[in-house]
Length: 150
Image 1 (cartoon, rainbow, N blue to C red):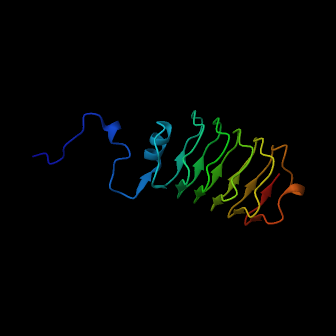
Image 2: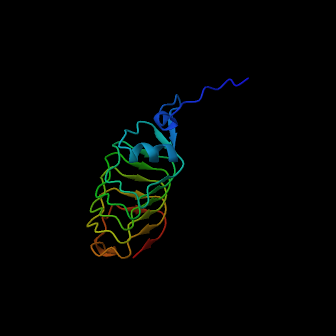
Image 3: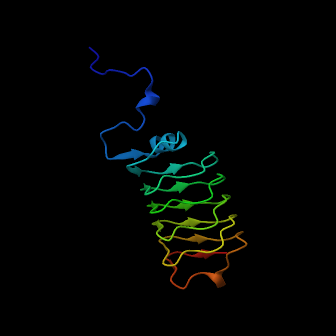
């Protein structure tokens, strides 16, 4: 006897769960559908090469966040990333003041003009091929526990 009831359209069920988190692939589908992500994301969130232009406010990704090659131009307030944050090849020009990155931060090939005060990066920081950033104009309060690559 089958005790499970299956839904005729499983896509409608994405995001409907009693868990207090989303897996990365679930969050990806919600974000690309323009739906709100109100729970923490467990694992990595891969949005590389997607048409994403914005992320929800107060987003927490417990793994890495990969946005390479997307048209996104700004990050949301209160973004927390437990792994690496890869913004290579995006149109990002600034980072929010309250950004938390527990892994590496990859800013190569972005038009970013400055880093926020009090930014803490627990891994490496890549600013190579970033014409507006130089190791001479980084904020004095910047903390990078790994290496800075220019």
